[in-house]
Image 1 (cartoon, rainbow, N blue to C red):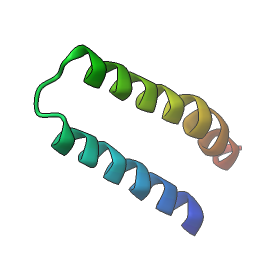
Image 2 (image 1 turned 60 degrees about the horizontal axis):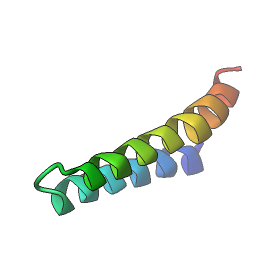
Image 3 (image 1 turned 135 degrees about the horizontal axis):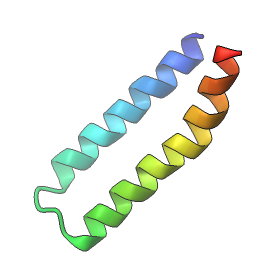
Image 4 (image 1 turned 30 degrees about the vertical axis):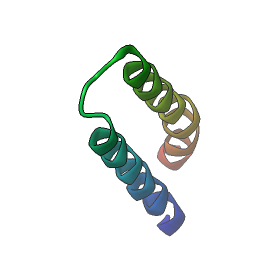
Length: 54
């Protein structure tokens, strides 16, 4: 469970860093954000979080 919490904290840190580095939301920034969020949903939520809920 500790590793799982660390993964969540690392993801939040990654999103905060993204927000700080992209002050204007151009097409490239939006694409990067969508890829990051999609990856988190597909890899973490649908796999890791789902396993914890079983």
